[in-house]
Length: 445
Ligand code: SAH
Ligand code: SF4
Ligand code: F3S
Image 1 (spheres, rainbow, N blue to C red):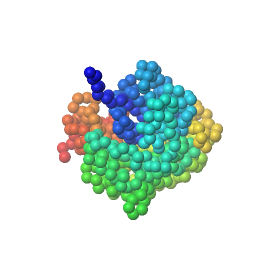
Image 2: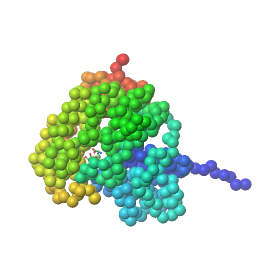
Image 3: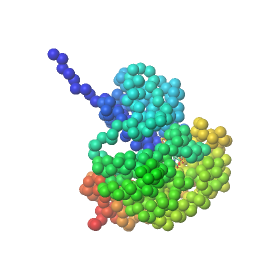
Image 4: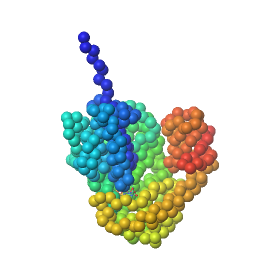
């Protein structure tokens, strides 16, 4: 008599690099592979399939992938059936070069074709490299399996827009993600309702240029502001955020929504990149420092406590000390609560990569000066919260017993002494400010 072993679920390990869009895609890739018998595991050692969901934005990000593959290939000796796949923006940008540089890779899939993962995996299992970096005609979201009904945590990302038509001179995104596409209104609303039914209280709408959203509705294209208005009507959904936005798409209705829509949180990531009009022009940004400052002014008129965040690139080709001084002046004028700053990294295929570099030591020095100023502003904004009231959406237990961590309206991480469960919107009083988080005590309503 032969005993039939129950089919063991195959192990899937996904490692995510890059932006929030990749976080969302990683979830959807895992869901696409569930019908094939894959369940997520906690470490690469337990996996039958390892997917690296990669980022191509700066050289360092892209190079990380190759060192990771270098480490992972040793696992193939112990697990001969193990497959390694590269997904995301490096997959799209480098395609077959990846397999040439890293023969341990079995599968390469771009960010617009991962709905075809099951077929690709079958090809990889049959032997040889399986690669799909097409921008397919079909909408991958339509082709993906329905999302599982499992309960989930209080916060979720929801991609509503993909790709970019802006072609900033430094950026690979228009090449790795393709042209701007918005998901239809009904699909977005259905996915949001489903998330809320599964326990989600806060949704962050995602897109490489999310405020350029123009999804098809029953009566023509909808703007992001109108979409936010419709989402706000979902009962049980408490908070809405969106990222990332381009200054040129900060339309009147969206600015007004920051004043009118209670569920829209007072936080906005609005990258400016530089404060010098000469550099902004060379970057092909199509806004000036002045036009950006006017948008900030109007946003603050609509929502005085809005916390602003931004991205900066330092050492862009041709940047002089005077250009950099203009960036510092813009930062002083805005007063950011949060920001990311990067040294310019030349990317293959982008126009700026052809231009002469700024002296690396000079660029590093500017980056340090900018980061010192941004850190001072971030700390000042956090410290200004002490003594104030806030509401925290509890996400997980803190490091100490009897403590929970969550985010305030302004996206500050807040530690609260409370036994309340995750998913609770807890009124608190902020009591202290540490390096990267706030402490708070529950407030009796
Ligand atoms: N779509 C968003 C940002 C996408 S990339 C926007 O338009 O704002 C995230 C950030 O990475 C950018 O805002 C920019 O500051 C930075 N970045 C992009 N390309 C870069 C490069 N070649 N070198 C250094 N930083 C870069
Ligand atoms: Fe890149 Fe510019 Fe598009 Fe943002 S707007 S994704 S920085 S090209
Ligand atoms: Fe990176 Fe691609 Fe996002 S290049 S930042 S993962 S869109």
